[in-house]
Length: 116
Image (cartoon, rainbow, N blue to C red; front, side):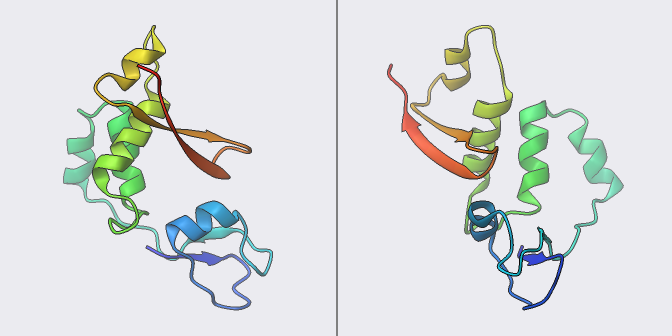
């Protein structure tokens, strides 16, 4: 999926990564998806059984091209950032990589290795 400016002055289309890192369109407009996906009732019903991180990954996948961020990585990001067990290290069980979002929310994504 591509993202476009709310001002639509220059008709530039941004990839998810470009939109995430830029934050604003070159013409000063907000970036929004070029289309809003329609979700079938059956899909909504199947989502009822998902955990919050799984649901977030499914929704985000509608807006992120698989070529930019595959579903497994998207699920890892949502799980590590939206799952808060008593011991935060439990969220990373079996994985040594996490993504930390900071500096204004989604302005920058940095990957860091966790100490075992």
